[in-house]
Length: 68
Image 1 (cartoon, rainbow, N blue to C red):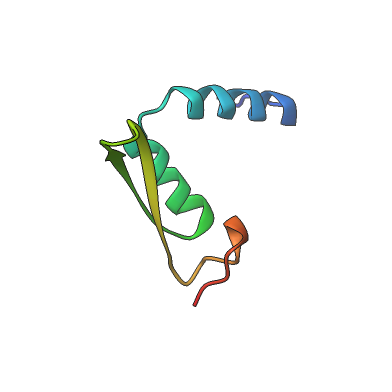
Image 2: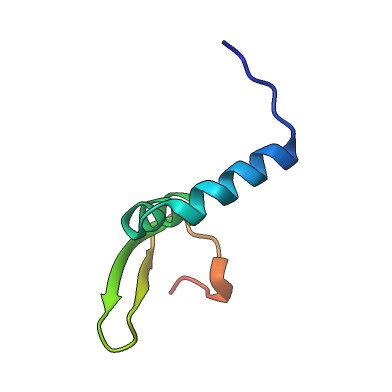
């Protein structure tokens, strides 16, 4: 089976997926897409999830930070 998608459809579906996935899945995707390892940590003082990203050899300056 083949499904033809427009760029708009792809972006809309990715947006829906990202909006609804859990923190661990989002961290996995961030690591895979941006070149690194990402872990989701719940910050008990602010009640929000903080993502800790560690660049690997495939990281190329995303997030405005250069790899050291």
